[in-house]
Amino acid sequence: MSLSINRNDHVTPEAKREVRYDKISGNIIWYIVVIGLSAAMLLPLLWMITVALKSNNDIYHIPPEFWPKEFHFENFILGPESINFARLFSNTVVVSVLSTSGSVISSMLVGYGLSRIHFPGRKLWFYLFVGSMMLPGIVGLIPLFHMYSDIGWYDTWLPLIVPSCLGNPLFIFLARQYYMSIPTSLDEAARLDGANHWTIFTQIMVPLTRPVWITMIIMAFTSSWNDYLNPLVYLYSDDKWTLSLGMATLSGAFAGVATTKWNLYMASNLLYMLPPLIIFFVAQRYFMQGLGALGSSARDK
Image (cartoon, rainbow, N blue to C red; front, side, top):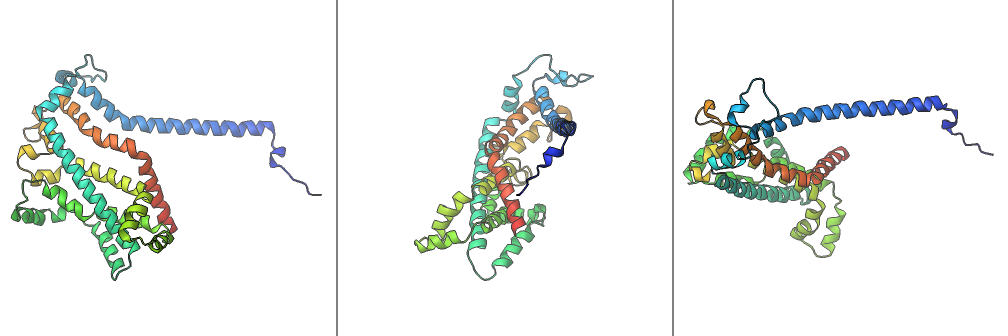
């Protein structure tokens, strides 16, 4: 006769209650820490909102008042109007969408070639792409400026868009690592059905790699949307400026900090922040899946 022993039979009710209380107290402490950290991170955003709703004189009130006495919603109209927000917004959307599309598509194609197509020097090219991530972008700024000026690209959007279409080393690395986690048997089965590399890439790989290319879209769009240095260097005409340059003029970067109207600046800045935030919150599930899958594939290697 076999006897099954349940360990819980030897635990007293007092011990069970003690364990349950320990778990509850541990959860309470954890929630308090998370709420405290979240509040600390959200406090600057809440302060921006309150400043955007105040008059410029109330901002300098001592002691500072967190809650506005009067709500000035007109700041969200006067601030954008002072920098021609609509025009700069449309410029930024065009540049960001084109550069993001070119960067993601080219990086996915290169990553597919490095992971699925066998050719001489494949590993060498991969190491070169990874090694190029160690170089800061500022290193090539002066020679690139001379090159773009010589070919007539100065004061155009081309220096902000065309380089992105040549691939991003970080995105190539992410795509290649994700492709390596997909079984090659899918490729072999597709080839038996007469599929070529383009069919395999578009019909099989793109749907399977949705988390990673959505992750790339979020990262590329945010980087392009917030880019300040490249538009500052390559754009001269104010009708071609992006929002980052317009926000710099509103903050007094070109006229002195003393002239800054912080209520109008904060109101415009909140509108400036909205597109990346919306994209992230809409696609955050795929973003976390992409990062998680990349981490698991790295451990498997």
